[in-house]
Length: 325
Length: 305
Image 1 (cartoon, each protein chain N blue to C red):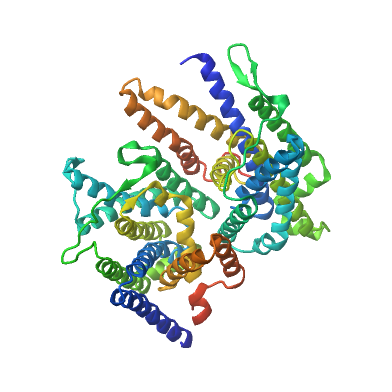
Image 2: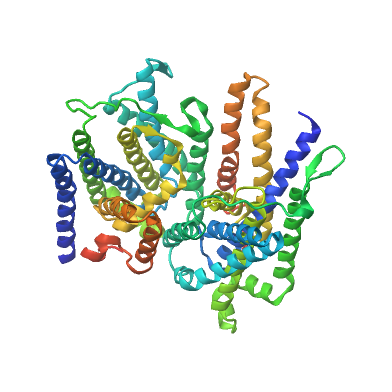
């Protein structure tokens, strides 16, 4: 129980710090730091999504950048048409975040449903490769489809709006992202605690035994995969609004790799693992990126050390191993 | 669209496929024998290309460069195996993906630190300059030489695996690791040799392709992903599968990019046809891979039965 208490303490500290640092930056008029914190929050939402598939379900998806990119393109395309006053598929474009988020989640959930239904026929290394292949399909489609910028990407001239907030102010955008992150974490915790989560984790640990007690692995895994894609898609729509730009790079395989890296650095399957991991990654990029242009070398060395010697990530290091390996 | 153009594209596809085979053979051997998924294979390709370009640039001799590229990739492979990869054989695929992803970051930045951020250029060796007449089309002599080279290496690799003692051990390692260790084969040394052999093939491919592309950091990753597509299509662990998969991917990708825009131009206007055709062509091999995995979840030639 001691470890569990430590983990909750660490979670509370992480949640508090992620709010307090930009709050201080807001008072001290440091918009750059607020934007960094927003980036951490949005990356963390994406990684919470992946954590459902990877951490709870043990499905190593090497293609989650696809859903990030899909969400991003939904936001970009909706804003593009709203800005130009042209219809898209017979509907008017929109510059409201809430409907954009809903569409982003629907689209990425639908795609995740198709990808998951096909990919879950395989397992192990083949699953890793087929999810990568689907993401590459999306990447190359976005790269060579000229209507929405192709290789050059699609700028969002005016950030999409949220009722009661002024999204062009960094602090307002941060509050929105932080709020969504907290809701996402709550959903993850509820999911993990529910019968569904128990079944999912049982399948990860031993699919044969799970099947023997009457749990059908395919449906549960597919549901988890779709939920996972939806949440990552939502993060993609928010990421596009943060950078006010969507490009095929959001779907690149390195992005899929980074999402996995975030989870590993933080701690696989841990509630706040994605938050810790995203903070480490962004912090690393900013801190070492300022010291040396070769910061990726150091990131690689740290990552290698974590994989070889410190499995369990930051949260595992401080709060000990999870109760169920 | 003439027959000559078609033949030229087909040859390009075969040449591309054979270079992919050099990459995939090492990748599939390493997976087949050690059960390891190695994302850093593309970095070895890059190292081969950089060393070849640097040495060829300094000495003016392409062949010296080629030797240096192969040797450097093999040495880097052996070093990586001993320092890092060896610790990953018993780990799950997630750890292997991450550790080798970390290796990509380290090797890419390392190469950038040594050779600088600008691309290097590598000239085609003098004896393969120009074109050769193939009856209906003048084809690049160097690309034709690459086809010959690729086939020769494929035959050599087949002979190595089918006819030599090392080959017997590799095949034995693929079917039962514990048993050959019990029979007194030094399995650790065998793993290092297999990894270095795969690295040498990747370095060779990088050096050969370096003469028709610019040699730059990040050149390995697109090829790496294609090589993964190849071995998944062919069946992981199977050299024959790698050959068939590589030729399929090389020819389908090249011909798709050539034919699809022209096909759509039959019923769409030109600019639209170019867009749709190009978008679809770039997705074609991934579509092929997904289809094969759905109908043959272990690839066309599954290793170990």
